[in-house]
Amino acid sequence: MSKKDFLKKKFREVMIKTKPIVTTALITGATSVSKEMKVAVSGVNQSPGTMLGKIPASLKRGAVAAGQEMIKNGLQNINKNQE
Image 1 (tube, rainbow, N blue to C red):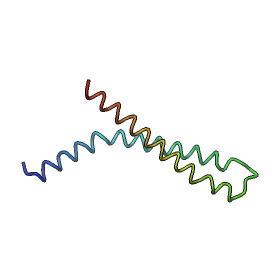
Image 2 (image 1 turned 180 degrees about the horizontal axis):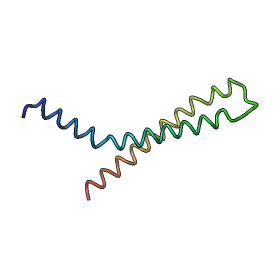
Image 3 (image 1 turned 135 degrees about the vertical axis):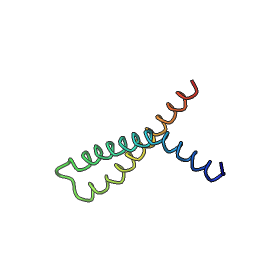
Image 4 (image 1 turned 45 degrees about the vertical axis):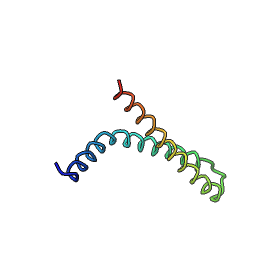
């Protein structure tokens, strides 16, 4: 087996093993952003500037939620494989 074939095989294995972790993290992040956006625009008397100011924070919190979920699932997977 050539070095290139070996790397392709290992890359495929990594993709297969990480796909569920990444998928769950993306769903968690998207759900978090959705909830945050609903809260950001829920105030009837808010100015457009106030609402637009809340959007970046909502996106950041969603990205953090996705990252935390990915780390949590990754650590669970590692611990499961070590047992």
